[in-house]
Length: 392
Image (tube, rainbow, N blue to C red):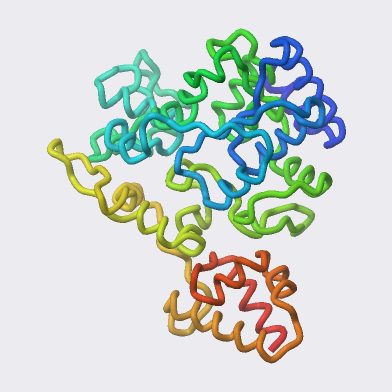
């Protein structure tokens, strides 16, 4: 396997990719004589993976690790899926943050920050853009912007994912000598791209053998497959629409762990800004609260996780993006739109279902919004505003 071969696979049309993926699924199943399962998060990628696996082997078990970090809509989606084993990690997320810290800005750099803080010279060199011999490393320059975190009042490590997701799968008695399919893709990170180059889709000979049959798929492939196969996905994604010949969700674009800051610096409107609208209580629990412990480190407390301190330190916004309004008052703007929508629906013949569909949510979500039981993200509020401006 090499980078060129990965590019060739990523460029294949979807029907060819389905064929290659199905071959990898069958190869894995046969190698382990059916002692396999799907690691199932309920997200878009794992929903596609489960559908592909069960298209070949209908009785394969799905395993959901109930970390408490999933969107409520994902948990509801998993509950509606047949033959799913629910398991839990031994530690809760708050305790993981207190003991091991946040994983940020990604797993690879978080690991280097952790070891640099322990005094490991190799990690210190990398974080300051140097090779082990002290010469300048072009590759390590991407770490330099984060070296302030080494001496910051925030614990940073790459331990969270292992403790919360991977260890429960390794240690559960029903999964002993069982081997997983996971829905990760090489384009998601350099770490995953390098893993594919090293082992391909089916890593038979690693310490923890794992099959990643979607490795060479793109995000567009996943959305295209969902549309073609008419799969049900969690409502938090909204609908799949086409803009400029590109498919996208009308709701949240990714549904990893709700409170995880990985990648927040890469997004125009990050997941926390969206969370303020979609799940206000979870937003406040995640961003606020926190306290300094006896060692001067900022840690969660009973009021919340306190993530806003870390985001402030690295300059990542978390306040929701305001929609168009002369007063600039975000919540007043949303309430004004809510009242306009109520009045419009009361005096016209358009159904709530049709109105909800046009702004990319379902009927239940619209009803909750109209009754002040939830907020909408900035993108959806802009759709409401445009729709009302057009029809009023």
